Length: 161
Image (cartoon, rainbow, N blue to C red; front, side, top):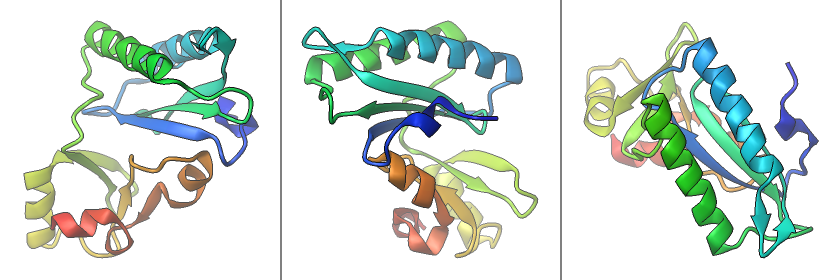
């Protein structure tokens, strides 16, 4: 399946919001459609933003802006946050807790856990240095494509265990 993000340049600025749990296919479809509606009308200082959005792995909401044409202003970014807060309330899913970490298990399944749980999983050997973790702090689309998923030992997550 192609993503709307595929049409954006690697230098595009991104924001990633992780869901507290895996979204159902129906929830993902609804959220994806709502995100598309939002970015289609997203403006900054009355200038239309060249933006795209998608839901990755039924878990991560990604909003992307190519700022070579118009930069996202503080007000436009606030608008996206308010939109996502409303969507979060409507869907009954928290997208704003930054103290949750997501990783892939050996079977490729994605799990999202609290910071304390993450530490405990590392201590008991469930998570290892080569466990793939997701980095929601990447700032550009090119980074999303290259280092969003990487081994625990190569990420800032290693400071948390």
